[in-house]
Length: 64
Image: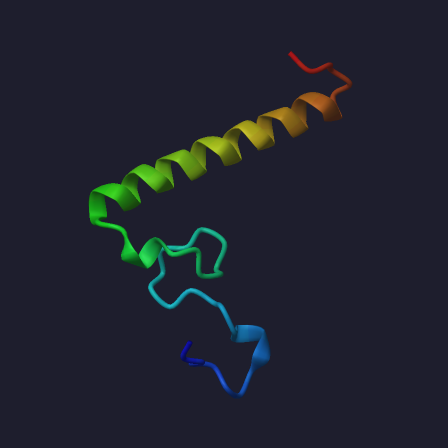
């Protein structure tokens, strides 16, 4: 394994390609553009669902 970040340990594992939705490397740099678009859409949907669920519970609702 090659360590690229030597000076700031907090930057270790950070995304260098700009594709990661979290800012930390998740391997998306190796995806084709089509695969990346699919993964991004899946991630966006999951985030939307999580946000909607949180809003639902904040209003005193129950799980569907």
